[in-house]
Image (tube, rainbow, N blue to C red; front, side, top):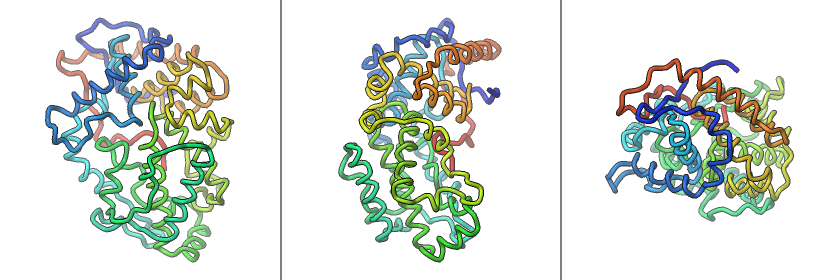
Length: 366
């Protein structure tokens, strides 16, 4: 696996321990403790201001990112240096400017980027697709807050983007109907003739809201939550004949980087439901009591930039198809230990490190 920009560092205030200490089952065995620590760490990042624009409770979608990081700090003296390790208030102050700078349109069909103060597209097509998505989840027995997946009545684009589970760290991953630029010219012509510009924006609204609201309903480890959403999304596109705007029909390339991986995984509805509700209890149910440590360590290695996203997808796919990861993870943690040993320690007060301001969000790549 290629070496990429490392985002992990030894904590200068603690003696280093080998990362292979994380390959056991100490995290999942004491999950409640580490989740409590995650809540404390989140509140500390929010600072003392009770009027902070960021919730004082860590989003369920991010819960085990912070929990496992707390575990790795304690077990191995290693911290991740990225946006999730930085105070949330200053990031919230800059979030709107960052979002505005990343807005995209679809020049091939004459669509400009949205204006944040404009109302979100709300049409019969949006409502029909949201209704179908709610039905898709209900058919799997997946419960969620009834306020989710509802028509965006009265919302502007800024409202919808700010509702992302990744606020204030990143804007949503898809900031415009860019899918129109990635399908074939023939598909673009057919979609434009069938739906018109408003219909294209309706597809985009549905894509954005279905994904962001799903993450708001999930709980556990965020990269695994993303993987579960990819399974749900591909099944939805199959069952509702929606691939016409999510796959380039000339090349056969899906707009979902996860699709080739999730096609190899066959989970029963009950297993998918359990993983949606809480990735920790779902993994325990599907793979047994020791697997969650492996899956969280794999996500942590991606956060550390010890592996790339496609490496992460391959490892998770292997584990979900019954292949243990112990030997692979042992090799990766040994390699990361070697890389960390070659880096200077930070100053005593530098615990979060620096992050590239252009760093892309993890998860579905579009």
